[in-house]
Length: 101
Image 1 (cartoon, helix red, strand yellow):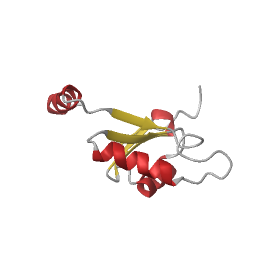
Image 2 (cartoon, rainbow, N blue to C red; image 1 turned 120 degrees about the vertical axis):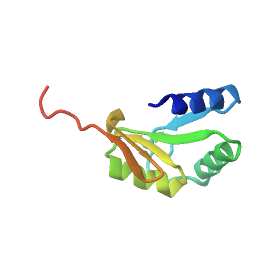
Image 3 (cartoon, rainbow, N blue to C red; image 1 turned 90 degrees about the horizontal axis):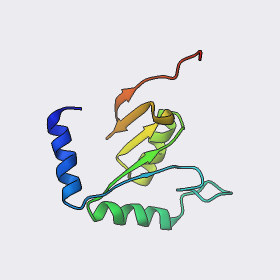
């Protein structure tokens, strides 16, 4: 990460902005139906409207995680168990898991 990006993050933290990362299954969805309740959508919107950063953090594959993020109006997804990062639809980082231990 570049110094200017580090400074932006630091300034955001100093201005009271918070960073929220949510898992998908059982956190943003209802346990039995895997639907996204209105209360989830409203909470995400309220966080964003208050200037906070909201992202998905999941073990799901990148394409699947990004579809969920888009459906919920979230601009960032950390996926593949932390091995991929998508922001505004652009795959920023993708390091696949090794095939062997």
